[in-house]
Image (tube, rainbow, N blue to C red; front, side):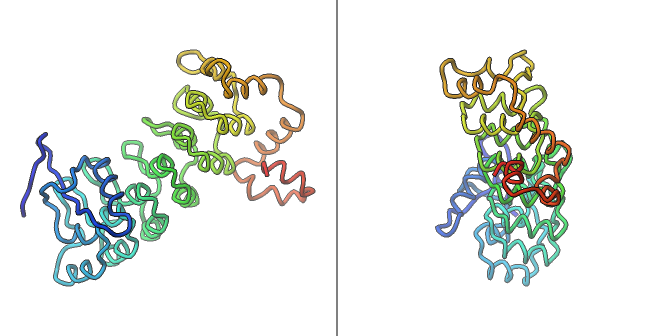
Length: 301
């Protein structure tokens, strides 16, 4: 087998620039997470190429010819990693059915599930979880849910949360899922995380989601966070509260100033009831048999 190194002395992989589906996007992501230069020489096998390009018939033929589904490159990238990075669920299924290791880890700690979250393939995420993929990994490995949120893949995020991933899992590098959603201004993910009961004040150490939303000048997210009870008085490691970080005379500053005083009785009651119900609020509030307008108020509808 031929091995190649890049100009920095690291082993490199080649990626084919296919014209179908999302191959170009997968190649771009591969370069980002593996440090690969598309088109370079490779130690990858034909099985890797077929999986990455989504060529199902070729993949089946190679397996029938005796190629090991667990063959890895020097960076320990498997064909399953490649199939998931390309979002090719049929290829991933064939590999898994033929014994591919669902929790295989590259030298950088990347799993197939992480790659599926990179590509935004909820189908691949579901498939991997059905075959026993670990939805929540140790803090020393890159986190699939944080990656899904970073890229705005809400469906992948929701699938992982449905498999009991801790909604407030704090990644040492990125903070909590909500903090990541605010950092990358993924409003859909912010809304869903808050709806599902994420702790609105948990971020990255002393920096709260509100701090980062203000720094990003995201008025919509600032309003969402404060509506869900974010504490504007929390101070970060620099002893600054959210208002201290707002650009003077900006819309973000105006939004914070409007919410600076005491909360209304209705808002205090809503926050108290939601806190009492906990993370199951979304699914249990209907059991209270409240009038529809009140139930909608509690659920921010």
